[in-house]
View 1: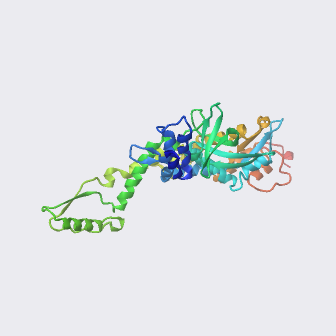
View 2: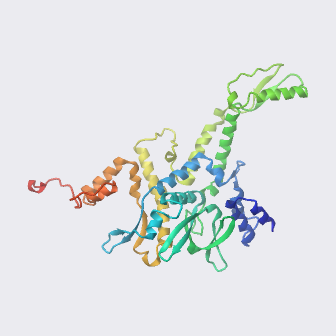
Length: 410
């Protein structure tokens, strides 16, 4: 067994794929950072190494990923087929069941899509192993993106390498449902955590510094000055005395110095060091990497409130520029890779963007009222969107009139 294989056997299964890349993929060498960065992360100038696990310890990173994944996974999805007259028909077959109800034996549709969006936000890619039966797609099982990677074989065919129960597997492209995030058109999307290593490394260092600051009872390092030379046993006594006054539980206790000792503070206080300002900027900088407005994760800028029309416009912009591109990527990849080739022109899957209006009852009421009063939607169609039963006589399209003969008013 080679040195690299022995190293791989001692590592968790989720990081073995990177080691196997170096050992078995001849195009990689021990100097290739892309493979080894999955094992040990990337080093930032702050001295912190940034990995998926360490980045997720930052509340801003966690919130950006969580909010985006939860919002998108909660949107209803349907599979439709275009009719000759331009209308569409809802399809309820096995493929629709996999995409919208039960992707696999263990997950609901919301849990599946939440996980896939989370991988896209962190890794830039989401993977799922697909199982097909004689009736078509029957199962989609998430492949963790940190142990799955695409590569081209000697013939130029796209293949996928992953790890299953400690063993490396190679899957052909038709067995993997791969959604790529933002990138330059290659076989992989780009990872925000990998490219934002400096921002997140700085944030990790600031969080650690803040934790140590409070852990020491807000007392910054300083000097104890004495006009006499201390004996070794006296030095031990002084060190034990100082330890009794360290820690947050000892904050605001009064220390007595004797034998001519004076305390001189060396470092700046927290206000002068602008610790809070540094941490505030880190939150906003992290939000840039994930395309999430700070207000979405509960962070308001200076002078900005959490309510009002301005916030509403920010949310609308986030839906259009942040969420919609992710939705279009998923819908396009479903149509290309999952819908059978002969049905792609007419059949497609689509997230219902109107589901976002569920968060604002007034906006949804105004939206439905305008559609019904302008003859675009019947009252029964509007009731269906509110999960209300259909009513007799409410299938006709209606429109408001400014002036009408009295006999036409019924």
